[in-house]
Image (cartoon, rainbow, N blue to C red):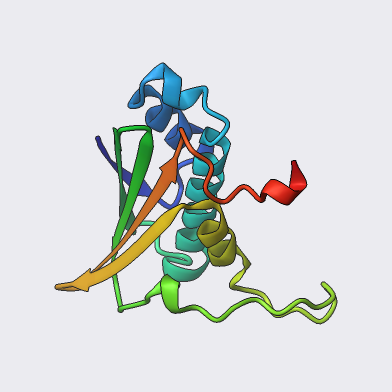
Length: 142
């Protein structure tokens, strides 16, 4: 399934479509919350950074699933911007922190695999979230 999304679309309407496209076992997975957060953060980046003030701007979200993995494919036209190359976020107080970068760091932390490509003016970010295994779980916390 592929959705065409405008900057004025609500996150809740986007998530409703995404959940309808997935089998119940995926939607009921604890990792679905991670998918929702990733979509919310990406949509916020589109609204506030990429298409700020551009009511006509559209981006696309592909949703696929196989073998317990949800793949979210985000695409938008514009200059090349590889979010996988964004610098690490340095720990610092909120009063001294510059705006930007935290959403992309969160997307990276919540995903199990993330890939980026740029072809013919289109940015493509593919994010995989494993709903069966939790490879990011730290056993020392259990």
